Length: 156
Image 1 (spheres, one colour):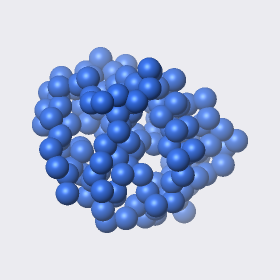
Image 2 (tube, rainbow, N blue to C red):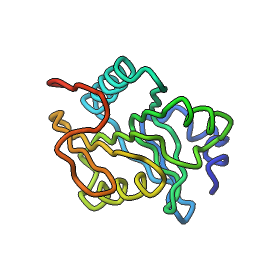
Image 3 (tube, rainbow, N blue to C red):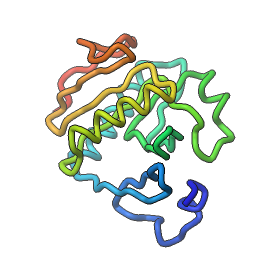
Image 4 (cartoon, rainbow, N blue to C red):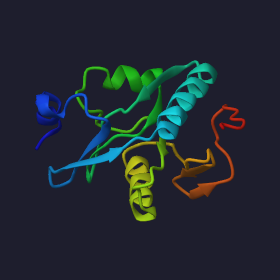
């Protein structure tokens, strides 16, 4: 399948799952718990209220070497938005990609997503567990904090 096929398939609309497309064109789904959705909303508000020179995305389709991946929350600068606004699937990752770990995610899957987003252009990838603990990654590996001007207090 191609991403536009996924978008056009009426049977895949309104599912309570996040859908991604792997490098073989096969659909991958993961469920979102209440805490997952809550954290997604909190990150969208936090980033959106503090980084005023861009836009927040939720579940943005991003093309990677391993298919389409969909970060839970992302932030792109105004230049990023202008470059990708007309695309069905973003051809590169925005500057910040946030993944909230679900119970079904493995460490290997999360490491792959970090690598894919960074290879696709992200400056940072934030991994958030369901307790609200955040790990930040950039091209050099794990960071102690974000390099973006965002203050994140206790989430839960």
